[in-house]
Image (cartoon, rainbow, N blue to C red; front, top):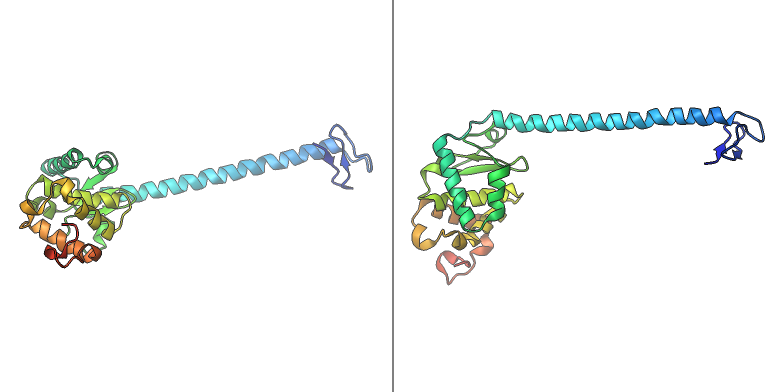
Length: 219
């Protein structure tokens, strides 16, 4: 690189030790520039590292605060959740099964964030993107079997992917045949009737076929 004299601004050859015009010492100038530049780079890197550490600490603290303010599932509850996930695995819902087996923390009651939101008759609730799923007592009480519990988890798994309520309801209702959650077996169940009603409210475009039962176009 050529050396620019700080006094007269003359650009000198890189090997020159003094300025050809004003005889200023170019070696000292070059050295000072390097000494000034190096700490600046280190300062920027240091600040970036500190910022990253603070962000990581904040996010981690938020996540763990959610975990510790909610109760873990007991053994029987864990078993029922695992059995429902196994149904999803057998029916080919691989991405949902992966999320729930490896990335999801299950809890039995509301952590502080969920507790701030009013809910009525929910079977489960999911926090995206921290991937915490709260499984409420109704999840264990009202479904007839593991297939119905699998339908609930399939809904919540869509939230694990970032889907909103209409998308989650539509996905489950369209895939109920694949899941084995069919009208001939479950039409009289509380979960079936509730989910069908909620799906009609969330995704009304699926219920516009007047010639079909309940105007359900997916039948």
